[in-house]
Length: 295
Length: 142
Image (cartoon, rainbow over all chains, first blue to last red; front, side, top):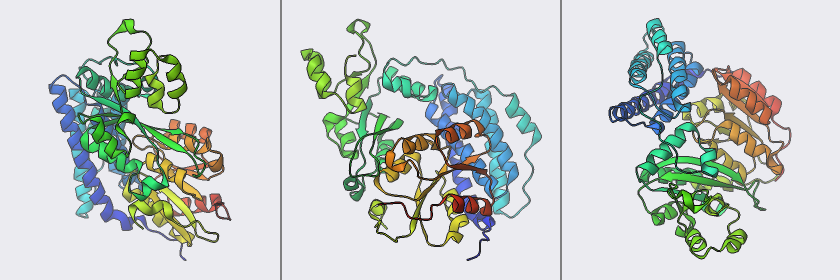
């Protein structure tokens, strides 16, 4: 068999995927622009913009469209700063981002039309380099402590803080993949997609567990913002409602070191009865259970 | 193969080697598979996120993973850390594919136990040779 593969055979597919990515980037920028007008931030949209730029940079490089690589690389650097500092992208940064995404779009169209692709505009690259990523919106303090707080990026923390301050319900639970779940079409991909349809997934973290019949045991700890109730979440994740816990902001500083305030059935029992010994023997294993406990 | 039935692929002795290609871009997954077509008798499977990669690796046996570094939710670094923490996956070859600008992450992922890495853009022959070098001569034990 010949070892010769010509990646230019993918140029048509590149145009299709690049146009989708440009659409996603523009949608994210519109969302960020609206949020800036309201004096808030959209950390999830900033993350999606970063992802879009990173992906198109890699694809353009593979099919040899260097001007798109240059523009995407420059803008990715700016958006990365915003993502890593809480997900706030200021008005000037949004403006230069819109120009850059437009420049990328023009070059994708040139590839599609088999026209020469113009070089990356030097003035645009200079403008991106000279732009401050940060926005004016104040950062919201994350009103929880404990494991989830320690595991979130600044952008994810802002996303969660906004929800908690805005009294939008936040839920946490664990999903454990298995051959049985997979046979029924319930995988981490389907669970994540189901949750994204009813809210915003803040974080999904893998955690190794002991499962003797699998190549490796894993469960996924999930943090989601959604107005849906725990029954709806449980259906998506093929679990029971009592395994889905609400995350609430710490309001009562006199209540002692509750790591995160949850209202699982177990936690309600635990707090009302003060049954620390029961908790110590039962609340082991899942992250949900662990953060339900008083430390 | 149905989307839900990927884990049921028979791992009988003598079966083709299985490669898992992980990238959030479908086009990139297709390009990597095209580059590796000259390998011949190899079954390609795909994961579009680091989460899906971890799930597949937990439920099925693979002989090699080609792994993008920068993905949403769970990136290549976390996939490598998960794999290397599992006794049964400790020797699984992992080829990391990075993009310009990922230099710091690349160093971390190699420290975490990745077998090798390539930077996009790469030539088809580059990734083919690297996979040939890393791919074990025998199938992964079932």
